[in-house]
Image (cartoon, rainbow, N blue to C red; front, side):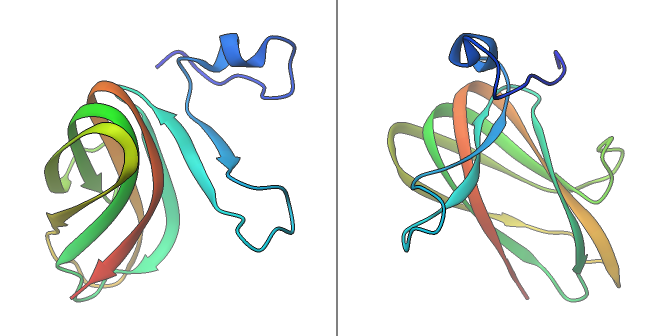
Length: 130
């Protein structure tokens, strides 16, 4: 909601406290490297291109952090048509999984997720199921 910020700037932690950003748990080329979108706050959107969504009826999300709210799924960045939603809450930094029913479509499309709620969530990944 407040735009983007540079991760390589001085005082980056202070400047990024209200921004989502890409990061990883381990150094580059590490066997345990795990990249994710950190610090999703109210209204933050994460988008991925492109997936064959034919037959997809369920999406499982992997998140962590201290937050309470809901995650919405859409095939448009403006969320004009919401294809699925789920309530989600976590009070610890432990991995939390949530499943949302997805309105089936035919063909390939981008996939967008929006967090609406309080606190901050780290978006680690998702899986598509029929």
